[in-house]
Each structure stands twice: as C-alpha cells, then as structure tokens.
Image (cartoon, rainbow, N blue to C red; front, side):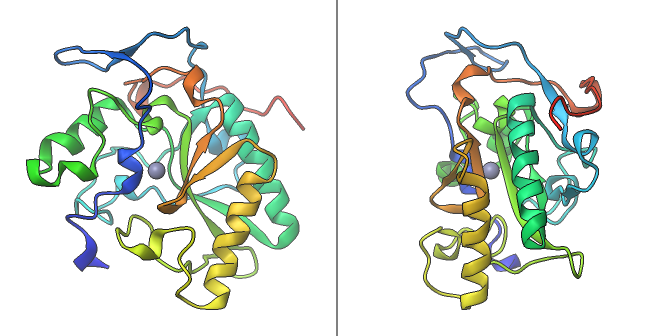
Length: 231
Ligand SMILES: [Zn+2]
C-alpha cells in the first residue's frame, strides 16, 4: 500500500460544502452563514465501548507516514453518533461490528494537511478556507470487523487508497470483498442517516451536516458526556 501514499491524500479530505458561502479568515477556521445547531461532539466509545477504533491519523500508518493526532479518539455530533450506534447494533445481528478510522477532525489538522502538501498535489486535500465535513463532526470513515475473529474484514481496496478500488462501484476484487463493502453501505444508508462518498467506500456523511459549523476544538478539550440518550 505504501506506493499509493503521497498522492493518495484521501478523497475524503476533499469533501466540502462547496455550495455554502464561507467568510474568509486569514488564519482561523472559515465561518459559514449558519444558523448552526450548538456543537454537541460526543466520543463514540463512551456511547458504545464495542465500537472498535483504528484511528490511522494517530499512527504513522497513514498517507503522511506520521501521526497527526496526539490521541486515538473518535467524536461525532450527537445525532450522527446516535445514528451510527443504530448501524453498529444492526451489524451485530449480521455478525459484524464497525471499526472507525476517523471521525471529527479539528480544522487545524485539515490546514496542516494543506500546508504540508505540495501545491501541485493540493487538488487531493481539502482547502482549509472551505473546510471538510470531518471538521463539522458529521463525517465518519468506517470499516467492518468480523465478530467471530475480531479482525477487520478485507474490502476491495484499502482505507485511504487513491485508486479506483476505493470506488463504491468498483467491480474488481473478490466477491466476498465486494459483498462486505456492500453490506457496510447497506448498513450505513438503509435508515437514511448517512450517505456514502462514491469515490471512497469508507467515507460517510451525516444527512444534517449543514446544521453544524466548522470546528477547531482539539480532542483533549472536548468534554464528552457518557451514555446514549437512546436505548
Ligand atoms: Zn473521510
């Protein structure tokens, strides 16, 4: 997979709300017109400790080859987190669970990605003047865990791989790999809360993403309550 890294800055970083007018600020996060709902980031494992984390940006195992998060943690806005729990619980009935690769991403990390990416490759990273859905706490990168083995299942392509194998319509790979990818998509989309980014089998946006502003709160400063409001 190493050969893909470099240019393969995740498509998901490109995701932005192009239609939303954002005020330009010289050094801080963009400010949209709003109105926005209050920030309500919650830590996923505090809602359900069985959600597996594999936070790649907290390790060198990512396309930068170094950690950009100081803590391997995952947060989403509460309605998105609650919807993700429904997905996780449905998958349990099928013998699977969710593994989260990335969720809320502070805006300053998006800016870091931009700053360390050569100008000719910036087409592959989110412009910090616009921000990413991850900055809103409304995007999540996920895969599947086989509950029989506890291991992540193989998909047609690897997480963050910038090739056609990442496309949700990719017809290569094994039938089993495609079936797992399609099962993940069914689980995420069947209730209407999430929709996939067609170029990335792992990236899902929450339907109400426009209700939340770009955030730049570091993980260490998020005061996440415990427990789910829903059974
Ligand atoms: Zn993503």
